[in-house]
Length: 486
Image (cartoon, rainbow, N blue to C red; front, top):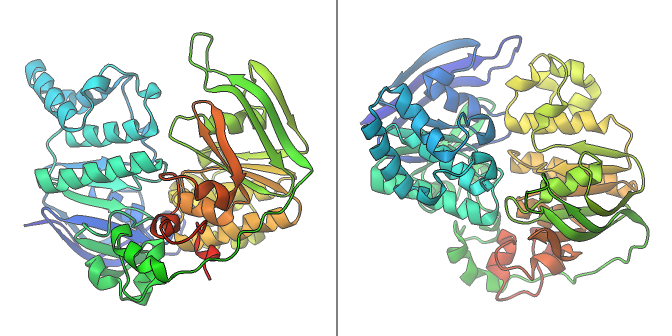
């Protein structure tokens, strides 16, 4: 049975000449698991919003779209702005109350939903106190509780640590296989999803350029950039770590060289910080050193204090004890790039030359809030690039960026480093971190538990590591990125 169908669907945002969607014809059947991929700004988010008419963006529409789903749940990328209640129980109850169900019916629905999604122990927990993974699960449960036929998710994995990513993927697989719910998910990473999704749909410039099983598309050159990093290393085109490990014995690695640094850009000594006198310490006697002219990344679990550490370095948060010393002017990109937007159009935020450098020339007339999340990331970086800084702080800079945009971001960051600028990154994107960093620190329980050269750190971690390391662990000493391979 067809749940969604589009025929020659096109869409143009106000004041824009280029089409966000260009002649999209698509059929999605009941029970399918769809992985939607494409470059930043290719039209993925626009298409997903069009599939749920209540969320359709304002603009010029042509073509047809038909929805046969009784109810469709939708999970936006930034779940924090979607929550309406103080605690998990209230969030789950919100949709049911809007459906005007009786109290006993609501209690039953909440009980069984909380059980299925492992939220029973968190029902009275404040949403602000949940980890990133718990918030993601709560958002999915809230979208599912009204008995939906289809669940649409826009980049649900973008800001999750490895543990939470695995948890959410496993949960979505259960939703699809055990409940028969159609799942349509956009993502910039195919790792852990390609082996069980029914279809991989790839978009480019508002058009669908590929639509088939990943096991068929893996031999297509145009799809290769969207598959797991290790897929292109072997002629067999493995789609999972399990398939790639037996093949990785043929790989060799470059020698690991470490450059000695002396001059520091930032030093923290015995830092303690909490958000309230009676709250737990987010940072506890933490010490941290960053060398000038390097790229230093901070990794760790959701809620471990990474963003707080950046805010302390930026001077946004004041510590209770300890010392912070930074050498030079600081620019800071927050996790939510919208905080940097103050104008009504992209061209008012940045000049045309800067827009071209960051791949935003086609969106000059668009309101910053109408950009895709990846384009917002680019705009935020472009705004900061016009500032005079010595130290650049980036909170999840590769979030919602495709592999091509990540390469451009990597080059930009490396160029800053070559010119003596210091870049400090907080990220859950371990493959990006493994490519771009000189040094990496692992933050756990409010302290820097490990710090060192990128290959040294990532090769010593079992779970917080890269796709390349996962497949080469048994054969190579310290390769963590494709650039480390011969």
